[in-house]
Amino acid sequence: MISSLLLRVSVTLLLIGMVFGIVMGIRQDFSLAPAHAHLNLVGFVVMFAAGLYYRIIPEAAESLLAKTQAALHIVGSVVFPIGIAVTLIKGPGHEAGAIIGSLIVLAATVLFAIVVFRTTALARAPMPLPRRA
Image 1 (tube, one colour):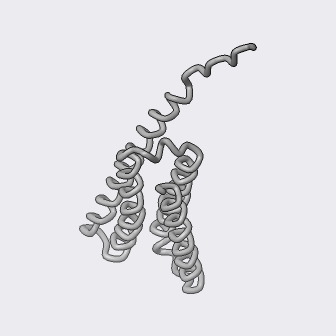
Image 2: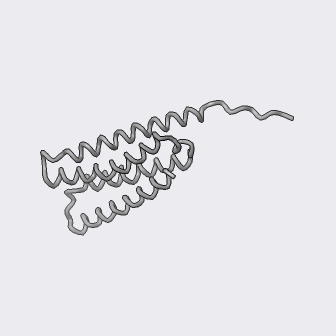
Image 3: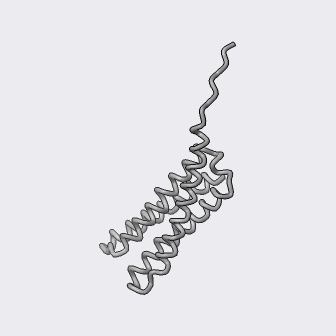
């Protein structure tokens, strides 16, 4: 089930992000804070929200579009913060990972928006009135 996968991966990335933040605090070196922030935001918050949406609206998770969105989001949530970290460590000229990761996350978000708009359009259809006996 897509929702369970997204929820589990997001919580795993949250734990990694928290440990990453603790290590930065212990070292008193916050130079990688942007990578830490993006890991927690994209890897946990956004992915967890998508997992909850698919759990609440299970028919939304049934399409190939939703499966593609989930896969892209998982990949992008790992590639993007790593790309940011590489850019911060190595400097200008090493932005490829951050760029590719951000575009993957953007594609996943566009697909998620399509899924949401399609499934909420169905929810807006008027419900039939109950018949009186």
